[in-house]
Length: 165
Image (cartoon, rainbow, N blue to C red; front, side, top):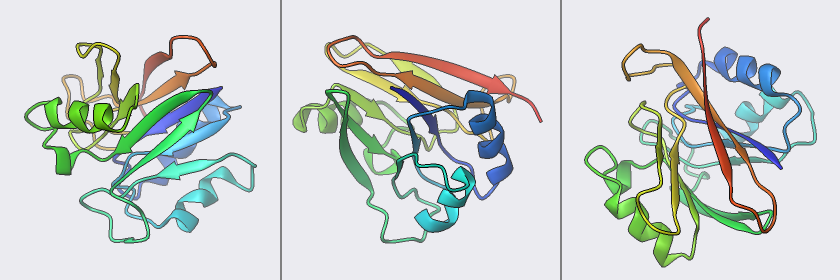
């Protein structure tokens, strides 16, 4: 299963559409908050394709129908999705890791920092941040997203990808 993971698009859907075009076909799409749109508006990017879209609310989102975090199970992997601001990810991943472990998740996804990260420091937990697809803050300031490959019974494979306009 190929999953496109984005975060912090801040209404700049063109960048999300570019990543989607580059990675197509995908089996699911995840947005980790600060889309600044509701789920119906954002799903228009998928142009009617039958692809599940999973979203959470970020600190700049005002659609209170979006949950601040959610758990999904895909290909036998329990995944915690959150924006991260409520778990203080700007200072460390400890609260995020604790929340994932409390909920029996082997993967934790977050955004908020606008800086990509792959963290495998917590045994049994893969922590991923795709960075920002629109407003990057890491050195080089390249827009980023992730592709997560999942297969039941196998270790997840995550790859960070970059692009320029």
